[in-house]
Amino acid sequence: MSYAVKEIFYTLQGEGLRAGRPAVFCRFAGCNLWSGREADRATAVCRFCDTDFVGTDGTLGGKFADAQALAALIAAQWPAGQGHRYVVLTGGEPLLQVDEALTQALHAEGFEIAVETNGSLPAPAGIDWICVSPKAGAPLVQRSGHELKLVYPQPGLDPAELQALDFEHFLLQPMDNPEQRANTRACIAYCQAQPRWRLSVQTHKVLDIR
Image (cartoon, rainbow, N blue to C red):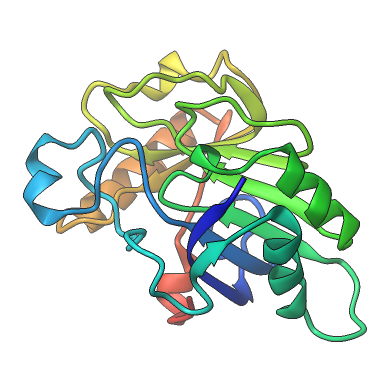
């Protein structure tokens, strides 16, 4: 299988339970909930996306003929001689492309593998850390994992309806829009009232890193 990648870069994990951890981000091109075209935003399931996942023209982006070629380029971004290799497969929607061949190739390069998905597709074998961020109006197929990270508030998607799912951790993340301050207050209030949930902050935006 070939892979279409928007960008690959070395950074710190910006949000969720593993915020602050050094990671190579591999952002796959394409999403099944929104084409990425502004003309389609009004009819998209996910209307608040803050990521450019269209095309393959980002840093180190391109089309890769096989899993080994992509895994080798990801490995080349890690500091030489350093362990604790960690890669975050994201998008768009990475599970449109991520398969067992890629997870095997990345494990062969010594990486722990995380995926950030909208949960509308099943995760292949070999993912070490599954983070699902469900979207209102979209099917939720991947109903288990390590981290459920809900962008909040989303009309039609109540956190109480999700907390019985088979996840180890439940996080609320304020929706990044003109009402972000109010959204943040709402997340804080919900987490305080429902201690099963904890707050996720997009620290990469605060720190001005990728």
